Length: 118
Image (tube, rainbow, N blue to C red; front, top):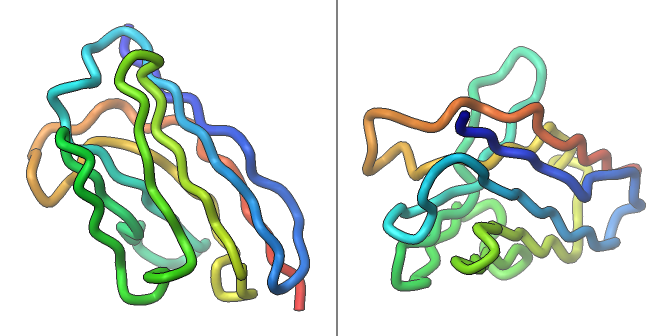
């Protein structure tokens, strides 16, 4: 059974940092380009950072220079280091395959909530 489990969210003040982790089980990880997404209630799920199988990252303009995506293929783990957090970063964060490349994604995990207070 394929499963994604996200963790590391929490409540931080503006300017603070968090590190999110996502672990994949039940499937190979190495061949796939992966991504972090976030979603506010009432809004569509937004892709914030992508990383291909060769560790080349791409970021949404809204997080460029503040977020760093990385992957550990041995541990099947995707990480997101978030620095200089802003209230507009508040959302539930999810990981999955890069939807700009793949039509079929893994089943979505439960996500991890990030709340940034002003």
